[in-house]
Image 1 (cartoon, rainbow, N blue to C red):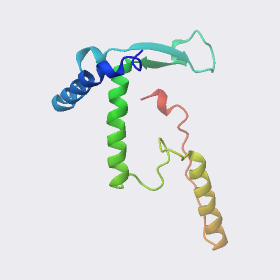
Image 2: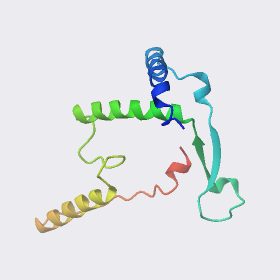
Image 3: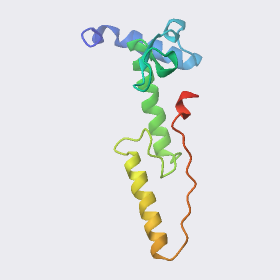
Length: 130
């Protein structure tokens, strides 16, 4: 629907986005969302602890989020804020690249006769605690 009326709402939305940016806050109504529990797929489906909450926010708020993300991401990339090894949320990158890098490091050190040690942490439930 917004695409069909974009020519009519572009200027008011731009003013609203600029106002929100200037005041450094979202309009009060945009802070509300519909929270839907999504079953994680392990164990008893009737248990509330086996669900994760998904917040559904308004489309106009999502447009502002995308706009802010674009500018913030460009700033971070331009100023080299992230480590080279950062793979999460990077376009055209994945954790597979991290595994390949770790594998190459291990093989390279073994080829040089160096000791290779690991400290492994189980973080399977880490996001349940956030």
